[in-house]
Length: 176
Image 1: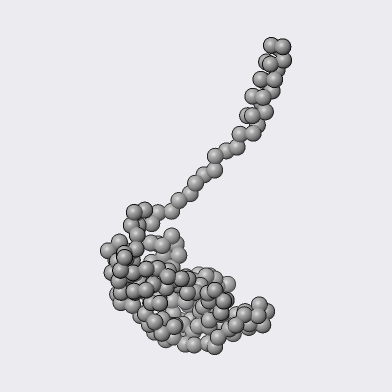
Image 2: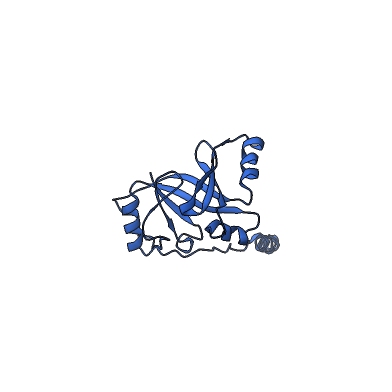
């Protein structure tokens, strides 16, 4: 009986050692905010307004979303103060903003030079008080890419937050 236990014990030890799996590596990214910093009670983050996609050919992209995917696609609008032409694609629960540069000085022109096929440029989240959000974020050392809010594609004030302070994502905040 003792002999059987020893063999069983040895077999069990060998069996369990084969079942051991490596511990997964956890990767984190650093942000300027500490975990206890939260939005101020004078402003609130709202819903996702849109995801912006930089495109090389606005008409071709517009046709793809309308004719191939069957989405509701708006008309092209030029926004010279931002250096872009835009088309909004309605997705029901949010929108996509197709961006194309207006001239070589457009920030989208630079983005497309680095990303030849185009791609995701930024996300836009609504806030209920853009000025309070701006002041609060500056206090929290989040870099804002303009001194004052600018009027965005929806005719509302917007600000952009530096991607290095937002986990690598360019974030646009828009007054709801």
